[in-house]
Image 1 (cartoon, one colour):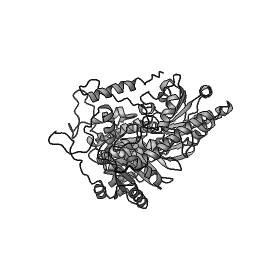
Image 2 (cartoon, rainbow, N blue to C red):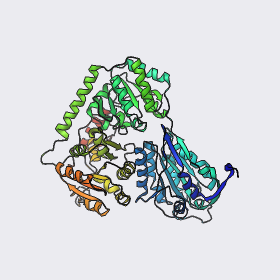
Image 3 (cartoon, helix red, strand yellow):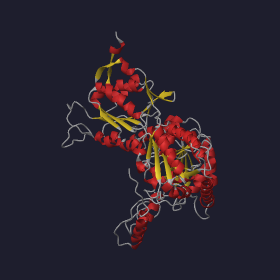
Length: 629
């Protein structure tokens, strides 16, 4: 028989499982499995056909059992980020709430431009059954299901109403997953009955396929234009985003910044872009960055944006760039991002663009400006002195501060370790304080700032990183939102070390509330005061260590830096998940960057405190600039 005409009869679910096992990605000659595993919680909708398919045909597609559907998407996202978007995981859920639980995870992946593959179960395509359990009966659109909620948070969405539709849906899904410009959540809804329907699939459909991830080269004319801007600039600045990591352009970034003497500030996604330290490294950028980065950026006349989306945290809500003649160069694989700020766009892979820029700068005779370099060094030195003096020093009579805690973590971390954070104060504090040199890695999710992302993502990092510690740094509010993946960590022997800063509430938001509303309200874990009928009584007592121990973790309660250091040493030798609960000072925060952020105070109020804060807000808003296409 002609091989191209050979058929094999399979259910749609069986075909799906067989297809996923033979998909590969390749970049720079390195080939790897694109989808090496699947997470899922079974229920009606996927327990009949898809679980059967995994049992019979999924020998090379390991199944992992999470505790929460949102969590498993976060694990896939963390895995994709740790693999620089070259591999990800699939996730399946049952009909109804099982599937809609994945939507927050999908939004987090898509906002952060990270590939995940989602298979929410769907209603019967035949409709013979009448309205089924958990079905949304839309009064106008009879073909709408709750899975249509995935459309705005997915980069590709399809619903398989016939088994042969896999022939076009799956290749398009793989294309989007492996496209650096388009990648994000890919959602393919699977009706319960169609999963079990059989069809004669072409045998060729199940042959190995490699999706090559190309490095887009910059246009020489754009490089020449950028060099001309750089030649005229007196105070250039590089803003390094996550694209530096995804392109693995660390050495090329260092070569470019040192050749030209350009300081580097790092976004949340770009933290650690300069891997081994540099006198030109300003550290974290803008709202949650260092004062050094904010000061230098305010006077910069040329901003080279490399692999960044330039969100409001990176631009200080468009207040940080104050030079009257500031210009921008946008280096990005995505045109939508490269053109932002009215930038000169260089549509290219970050590594390839940096190589071209470095060669062109050398040919043009561009050299470091020693006076500017000395100014950068002085600003960085001043910040480091402030950290040693104000952040890492213990304040007598107080609990350990969160900044002090990070100082202990920095001392304990070794080459090959990774720290993960996502929401509240931890990512901002790490952006300012974490030492990402000497092989110490950092993984910050701040595109969606999704509480509950951290521990599941830590599992994804651990699946990629077999050695070294994986620290998950969270507050008590985040822990309470999603602690249960500790069970998955115990089950799969995926050792993570959770460092829990217990400051009795959402203190990061309370701090913002005090700056914009002037009064604390609803952000601390307090009992109800029966006289005022508000949550302003005693602090609620929670035994986090006992809770974590019940899910298989070894736990510690620590109250000071010495106890924390000892617990971190002991945790390093453990093989099971670890949770270190550290009491931290409630209302002490890391020094501000001095960069403004647009969060409005109430325009009308009878409260004089709020009125004053509104006036201060109006003053800050006057700093905002307008940058047009």
